[in-house]
Image (cartoon, rainbow, N blue to C red; front, side, top):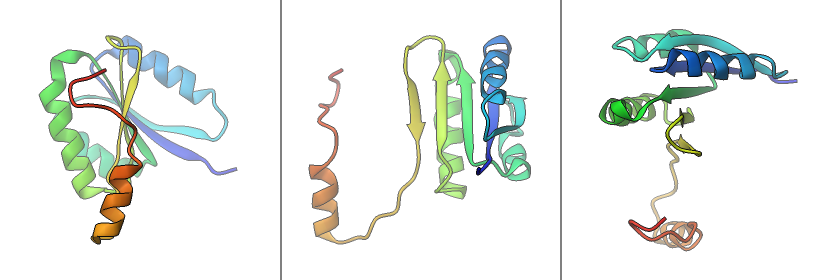
Length: 121
């Protein structure tokens, strides 16, 4: 079985510990670190070599998470970034995907997007 390394960052320590506890009991998952959301995220990411990153946060850090996610995807385009929060009953998954720069692929990609309208839920 392949072991997936998960790196956690949280603004809500108690919720973060709960997620860490849940994930650490799953066979094939290894928590490679659980850190506060601070200025050392990129350094810890480079040292942890994870298969995915999970941000466990509250809504007070929207801008910080947007910037960090962009930095991570810029440096590690194949690294999935998950965002889990108590305020909403869903999670967000971010990744960067390179596709051929031909019009046929762009058209196909657009045609197969899930149907969602801007601003509509």
